Image (tube, rainbow, N blue to C red; front, side, top):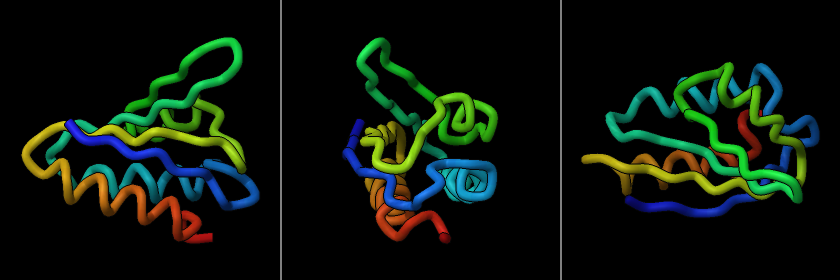
Length: 91
């Protein structure tokens, strides 16, 4: 299992278009990929391969998320997913 924390840069957060790109990218890997977001009141976990799960996490601009990958291609998955977020999720 590997993980890394990244900050959401794009001004609109993970709304439908970037969430779709995020999930589409995650589905290319065999590893289980989850996203964790901590708030003052709760910890939110989302399945990175499910658009509804990612949208339900209400990830906004400036939020710090932790991407956790577990599986045979976890290292590559983590690298690609974190770079996608750092690049602004196509926006």
